[in-house]
Length: 337
Length: 263
Image (cartoon, rainbow over all chains, first blue to last red):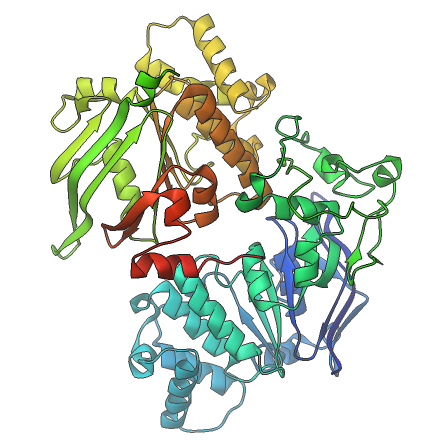
């Protein structure tokens, strides 16, 4: 299998009062054909910006720079916006967190599909589009496809609406599906069904998935490989189970140990409510150093690069390697201020 | 805490019903036949999906809604039909922490003023110095530096704001806290700190908790007794550790089966 997407040296900044503030610091990312990749991290780490930069739908004011943004034969960095619009949907599908924000509230579902087909130059009669819509709705588990196709978004539950959005995202058979927190707004049992749908539409091996989530369980469920993001950098990457069960980076270790199921086993470290504000935005050194129990001098001066470890993982840490021990036995989560 | 105090019933709800009217006038049963009991130092959790009636239960316990029928007894006092004055006195025994830390704090007040608020209502006779000392103790309990008293909510991170919310909930030494999804809007590592904090406060002060959540791992962490709700009814209840490992009802099994783990 070849490489589907290559991102190299992606930085994203915002300009405020003439001063550029970078929030993503030169990250590299690659997705193979048919591969399902996750990005996990806490709020503000930059995972959504990273995902959105791939489809060039960044929020207003965000200024990206990238040295390479290659999607198979396409240089996404170079192609004009007109061309990009045809890529979105037909070659890269996108699913956002809030399905109701993604659907037009004053248009019946099937008409929104019809627009999608029409805007990508599909010929055909209304009846044909309507039938295709019902077929694809059935494929994401909406058995009453006819009723859903005729519905306005407000007549759907959150879970049904998210299925409609997923159906729309894969309607034109894109090679890559980008999903940004697709189940965060949903109830537990609904989440399970949506994950099953995402699994079904990506496990053929012909469609890749880039899943952004803060939920370690969700990424374990769907993705073979994961990137762990902290303050605009990938701090660790590798096979999902390997990364989460045998973390090589102190941040990953802290994240895993923050799961309520692990908290019991961990001795609480003193230190109050954590780092003082401002330390978070250190201009140099490893971003995690102020919260890291293993940090030493070098960590506050240089930024570590992703390097391979004994396991199949890459970790960005100067510390030789974390002591070999079962997850949950060592480090306490230090609250972030 | 001595043995007698441990058995002290802080909240007792028996056969509580609450119905709302939809816009078109059709009745909607939000809570049906709910009974629960919380003793000092004990945690009772309500879990279920959105619309199950969890938050309505919390508001019934706080006396913010009047039940259609049934009784709500707070520390020996039936709150149904209390005068406004008596209800206010009763609320002094209760504290509440909400889901969205920033939305539940007045953005124009300082942390000092926010945390002092319950004292200004329930202990009006306190002089300034004592009040400030009580605020200091509350901030201490949630592990926020004293210097934070001068900040406003806007200057706080989500975890800090939730700590301020907890400080406000405990400053007037209540007996029972209603915790309505207190960690759902927080990051994993921040949630960890808040959970540990809640546990420690309970150990130190012998508070009873009514913990409302859809997050099963946090419920498991806090332990105690758990009720699983669906469509306004309790479908199953039991000690948290056994209920969450060996559920009997079909719905409880479905709910627990949907939980994801990395192991």
